[in-house]
Length: 527
Image 1 (tube, helix red, strand yellow):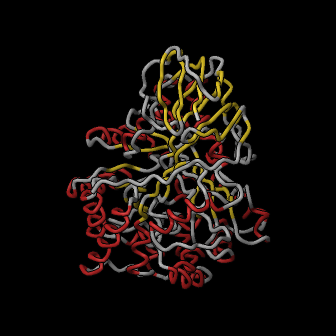
Image 2 (tube, helix red, strand yellow):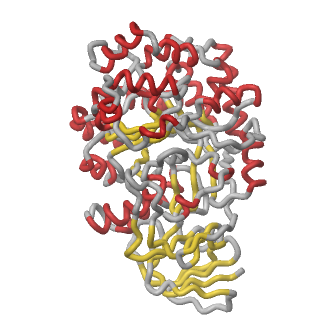
Image 3 (cartoon, helix red, strand yellow):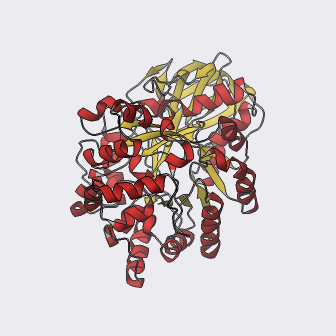
């Protein structure tokens, strides 16, 4: 099919000035871009002076299972996203043998919808995606946490040499099959038990395949500089590309570290991603000190949290009367941001739904409880499956990070429960608030960070730019393109997206969401 987009304000994704022009599509590809194109086509689309940009690339998403749920990618599509990178933070759904899937699914941070996992490795997962039909392009990283669990289970002991050899083989297999790179999540069980030898093994495999190592660092607060230095040393020794996930600084007391942090990124030629909010969302379980998680296997920990002596100890940790040992950093959110800035946004049981959208301090007050007791009771009753929203830093720091030239954009999407507004609003929020309202940078530079820079960084060939021969992933919108989701109403989709093409086929037409499935699994083959 031949389509001609006329009278567009073209932003090609490379950061240069927008220009008036036409774009000719033939099948999946862009065949021409010029000031004026006259051609015999099947359909003419009049952009009427609206912007046409490359489709946005979400470089950090946990929508690994979105293809298999009724909602699908609609919140993402309506904000202009055409490509998703998943399997981040060392979390994901593959590779994992059938025999181990139940326990992992029971505590899966990224959500566990009631679907059959008819895959065990990267290849069969991709086959399941293709069989279901993809709404958007999708490419998966290899989650280190799943590999460690396969080899070590819940053990906190360092890997032996033999286990590291097994780790290397499993990683090599997935990367050879087309995984985009390797991801680490060093605050999450069981990856938080990994020592430098284990991490170096993963970095060396990434280097061998010439693929990126993407890391959620051990600390994003008090020891963030040390955590970044650890990963720089490991990546330099291995010779691999290093990318930092969802860059932030947790806690007002750490705001002064931002210049040093960005300086390290500059000097070491690193890249990072970020979402445009001063609050995040992850598992409430992660607020527990690593030393406590190390001392118990998951089921035993749920029992221990009910013991008075353990509770007193946890209270002392949160109050910073007990500090973590050297080399085992911890983002102590209650001390860093306060219970009033930690909101409950997902639970398992109907009984606990009354706490959704409310702060820990508010919930505890209603029960006349200490906040620590409320949190531990909730974790026990929900078997650890509680997700939170946490307000972690000032918006001015979010803006300063965004203006750094080596940063790109990720939604950090987690489906289920009460969503974070970033699931529906990330990309239009940047254009509406950071560009149009606050003037932090030109629209052309913002689009570059959301498209071409992402494609270049992660090896997404023939995407991220409007150019002849590239895939026709295109986004058409006007000045009214904006986010609408809030913490109070996170289900509101973005508005103002007029049209969206994924591999040459329209997914949004005149603002209407279409049930087309033209997305592709994007393998990353280098060897």
